[in-house]
Picture 1: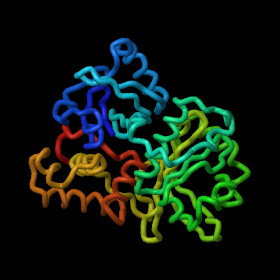
Picture 2: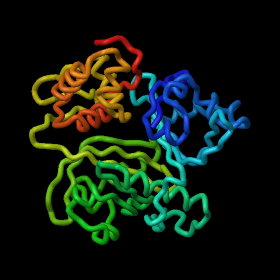
Picture 3: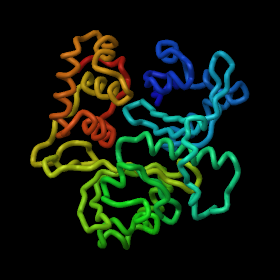
Picture 4: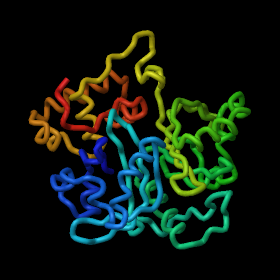
Length: 321
């Protein structure tokens, strides 16, 4: 994962991105997006960037070229403004894909696609699923289940065979189903959608989750992440991103947002302490304070809530709160 600011400068990167590109983090954080583009694409980056910011999200195949001249064919998914003036992108190379996993059900709108580029993209998506610790699924244009990871099966208490004939409509409340066509069309138009929802598992169990959807991560295939809630957690107002359990929550400080952001990108307490010039215990204190404000039951849950409520700020250069 990589994070860029409004000027297209990289401000954060996780270890996986540095390793895949073969670039040290310090060097990568001196670069701009166009410096990783092929020469023929560089002059187009500014206009493409403007379109990306307007659309709010972007995904598809792309060629990255590192300063040593090596080219990397990747599948990327990018989301604009995950924090004020900050834009997150995730990429995976076809070489990282797991060839044993299969997305051949593909898109209902184009079921016969067999070209190599499509196959590589689908394999890359499967790798994203298999690496995710949260419940994730892929649906097609008809809202049908195409693939899911083990965390999803555990959440729903189902097998992949049980989910294969189902659609999203089969696991949402009956009173919501009549509006699903309109909701899904709006999701496809907007490119992303998130919020709280109650699911009904195949066994009849009710599960409260927060969902985060990205449309057309591959043409005709749409990625959805489900974050499970708890009865002890406060309700969230997703318009304002604050607690609404009878008392408005306190917004995170700049430093709390910095710490959570660096944790989200895979940094350790020790590396965060070193980068921000503080003691590891201070990092832990900021994390605990953020968890309390967000009503989160764990560090990863705090990160998820901060992302979902648009409080995640991955810019490590801001003043301490």
